[in-house]
Length: 88
Image (cartoon, rainbow, N blue to C red):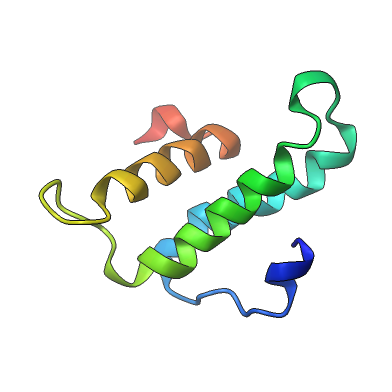
């Protein structure tokens, strides 16, 4: 985790697991990324962790609720990173 998130504990809500797994995978891949992707892994991983921490307690969201679009976007990004996009 980047420095600003290291001191903070991750949420333990089960709904956060998919986003947290994707964040971990991105951070592990970061040293191997090059070109246009270099430097993107950590900020995206931080965003996934922040979204999990902020929104997992109320997930899953219904499409009329605040947080739905952000949660769905983060979940889709996580599924792409985790290689589970087609499994939903």
